[in-house]
Structure formats: structure tokens, C-alpha cells
Length: 89
Image 1 (cartoon, rainbow, N blue to C red):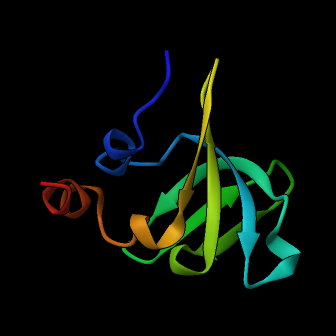
Image 2 (cartoon, rainbow, N blue to C red):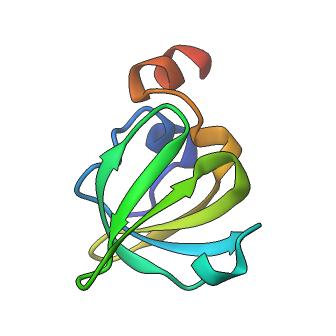
């Protein structure tokens, strides 16, 4: 089933598998792992051997689901999940 990008904005990202598609910090491009912490402006991704913090506004990420994935620009993820849910209305 195809995920709706607008629905994703209201979800918390902790526990989701993600990949950094673009970033102002080129060292983060291609980073894959599980989100272990989310703040208003950052995501912390555990790639197995290390944890990296990315600034949401400076990256585009792909959220990976079992049978699907979706790309989201990081600036749309800025804010806490409950704040993002209010914005979409």
C-alpha cells in the first residue's frame, strides 16, 4: 500500500528506518539506519556501528517501510510530530 506523504508528517520517526538522500554535509549522504532520537530540528540515526545527528532542514531523507519507501524534504519535518500534525490542517 502506497504511503501518503502528508500522513507521514504527523508520525514520530523514532524506530523508523531511514536513508539520507541529500544533505549539506556530504559525509551524511547515503547514511542508513534507525532513528533513535528526534528533536525539533534534528534526527539521530544509528547505523549499527555509530550514531550520527542530522539537521532536518539541511537534508532530504527516505523513510523505508517493509514494502515501500517515501522521500521527504527535511524542512517539512522540522518541529515535533504533534506540531507537524497541526500544521498539515
